Length: 611
Image (cartoon, rainbow, N blue to C red):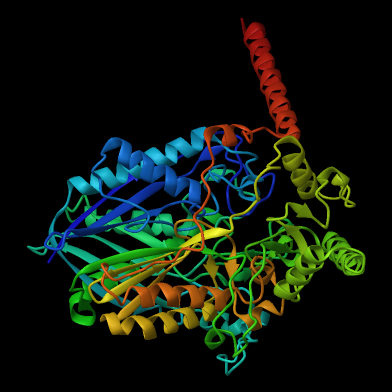
C-alpha cells in the first residue's frame, strides 16, 4: 500500500496584453479570462523504503526549465526538508494554447509575449508550489489501479492532422485518408485511479493524445481548452456525489500529429484557419471535446478494478540530462546506421507555415520567399566552405547533414535567422508580414544576444511505481514515433518488473517536436519543428535506453552520466529581457482609450440634454 495525496491550486497568471503560448502569433494576447487555470498535484510515497515522487500537471502550453527550477526553489524555501529534487519531481503541462507565455529562460519561447514577464513567472511558481503543499496535507494510505479504455470509432474526439507524413511510416499498412483520419491516432486513454485504503475516491490522472487547440489562434481569452473542461466536468461529477476534494487531471498524451478539429469551414479567414471542431463557437467545441474525454475517463475509473490491475511494488526514479544537439544514436534505433547524429537546434520553414488544421502561420507566398532565401543561404555557405577554416567547414557540414531535408529558417543555438545574426538586416521586409515584424522587434528591442534562443541540455526522467513506469520528456511526439519509443522502453524495463510504460510528453522543459525519420522527410509542420534533426527520435530512444538500463541496477550501484546540466539564468540575466509592449499594441490601447473617451463624452452630452 502507498501513501497518496492529491490537490489542486490556481495558477491563472493573467496580465493584460501579454501574448499567449502556443500559436506564436502577435495578435494572440491575453485580454480577459474565460476559465481559470489550475495545477493538479499527486504525491505517492513508499514509507517503508523512504521514497516518494510528485507529479504535477499544469494547465499551461508547456513546461520550461525556468519554471521547474523556480518551483523546486520555492518548495525548498517553504520547507528545506521537502525532499524534492530534479529526480523525484515531475512537472508536466496539458498544452492549452490559451494560457500565458513569458516564463522561459530562452528567448524563442518569449517572442509572442514579448519578453520575460516576472509577474507571470512568480504566479505560476507560487501556484504550483501551493498545489504540492496542499497535496502533502492530504497524504493518507491508499491504492493505485492502472487501467485503460479506447474511444469508439464514432466518437469525434481526435483526428490525424498530418496524413501525408503519417502514411510514410512502414507501420501504416493501409494508407489513411481524410475519411479515416480518426483511426490514424492512438485512441487509447491510460488512467491511474487513486483511492484510500477504505475505497474512498481520491482522484485520477489520465493520458490521451489530442491537441488542446479546440480554441483558435484569434482568441484573446485565457482558457484551459478541452482538457481543462474535461477536468472540470469530471470533478463536478464526483462533487455531486459528495466527493468535493476529488482531483481529476487530464494530462497530455502523444498528440504531436493529433487535432480535435475535423470540420472544414471555407468561410473562415486564412490566418485563423479553415478547420474547426464540432461547433462554430470554439468554446462550445472545447466543451464538447472535453465532455467526450470526461465521459471516457469516468467509464475507465468506475471499471478500473474489473478491467485494470493493481499497481504494487516499490518506487524508483531518476533523471538524465542530455545534450540533444550532440547525440550519436544507437544503430538499433537508427535503421542500422552508425553515423545517425543530431545537430544544433534549427527551426525549418515548414514550422513557420503552421499546422494548417490547428492554425496556419505565415501565408504561402511568404513561405516561398523564406524557402528560396534558405536554399540560397545553403548554397552560399557551401561555397564559403572552400575559403574558410576546418572549424567552419565542420559546422556547416554537420548542420546540413543532421537537418537533412529541412529548409533551415532559424538557427536558435547559433542565434541566426536566414543565415544572419543581424536581424535588422533580414532580407524579408517587416511590412510583408506582421510575424516578420514581430521577430525583428523582439530581437532588436529585447535581445537575447548572450544566450542561445532554445535549450541544448534537456531532461529525460523515469518514475517506476511498482509495475508501471512514467517516462517523461520535453517534446511533442507524433503517433508512430510514440509507438516506437514506448515499445523500446517496455522491452528494456520489463526486466525491472514493469508491466506498462506511460509516455509523459511536455515534461520538465520544452524544445519542439519528435517525428519518425520517415515523417521528417516530408517536412510538414511537425518535421519543421523537430529541431535537432532527422534522427531526433533515434536519439531520444538511445538516451532513454541508457537511463532505463541504468535503472535496472540498485540506486547504490547506479551511475548516471549526464552530458551536462542546464545553465542557471540569474535575475540580472532575466532583467535584460523584460516584457515590452509592442508598438502596435500600444497604438491599439490608445485607439481603445479614445473610443472609450468618445463614448463617455457622448453619454455625458445626452445626460446634459436630458437635464
